[in-house]
Length: 214
Image 1 (tube, helix red, strand yellow):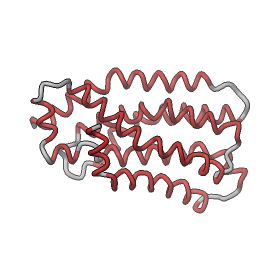
Image 2: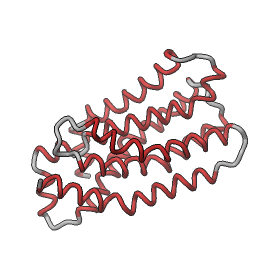
Image 3: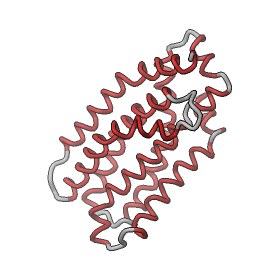
């Protein structure tokens, strides 16, 4: 509950991430092609690229305020499980960012002429794949929390690790659009998220301790 209150105080950052996603999805057809046939094929890629960029924006600010007001130091000396605190923080941010995106998805998919056959595949990839993106992203955010203007550094650290999630997610939607089974791609996304769930809280906690003590 505390983390949701913190996010409410930082609601402008959350709003900026959601607004950025909407802008990406709206401007892409205007800048490339508004042909329905093209957009129907590219819709999953457009939406997933927008989601990745929105997550990067939200992750960049995840620890900054806590670092500046001394909350991270208090977490470290509190005796509480730091990996568990990191996991709860990720879960709260996932809920606040991804659920509004899922609510907007029917409207945006219609705007991009996405076939109904692939819409639910897109929703499933978002539900299964985005936790992994957040869990991977917080490790980079924790490493650069004490670095001023560390946004580009976060992107350089994280983006290569995001590529497998992006590839499997778009492949699943395209397979569904072609009438092919896509459960294998979903299984790979789930495996990546579960692997991140095991590794990320501990690596993030170690990075936070190193950044704060440094």
